[in-house]
Length: 198
Image (cartoon, rainbow, N blue to C red; front, side, top):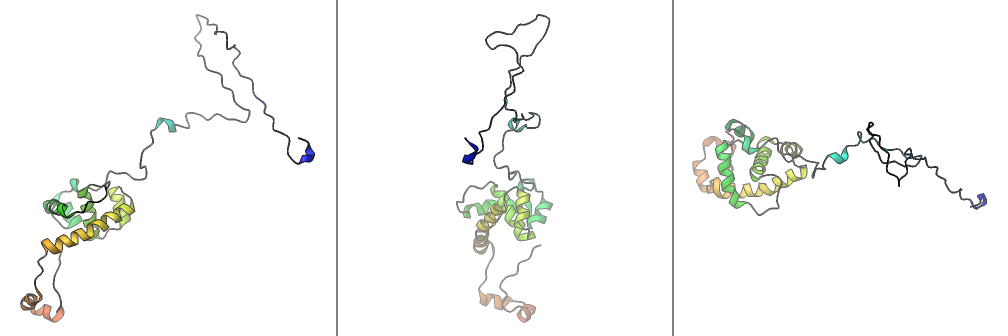
């Protein structure tokens, strides 16, 4: 093109000659006393730089699925002893497992979770007993914060219904008025239930 057209002249590339002097049609001559490694010739543009294979070992490692989270929880119900179970959940370890097996019948068919059912219950009880934040729970159980929140949201009504229907004895109000202690009549006249963590 001419300079008056406003376009730059075409780029020209200069190729470096190959360092291999042998002809491709002729087999290489081998001296019986000399060991020679035959390396295929490398041809590249003047501006091209070859990456050092030592610096780039990406191909040697298989990519991991879900590299964002580690699905091995640092805290699991399987690893709790009685003392730790009471600390984390307020329940003895035997009571924890009995509660889990009893409440399994009340669980809705939920989507598959990456967290085992026993660890889901542990997560919910940690939130209820210790007031741990969802970010903390997600780190402890190796899941995302959203998953921790979804697990809690799914379990909360299940636990509430189970406790109301099967565990807590709700007495009629007239019975409560009859048996209520004098101190409660003065200070808590409408109290219907006392919850304590022993």
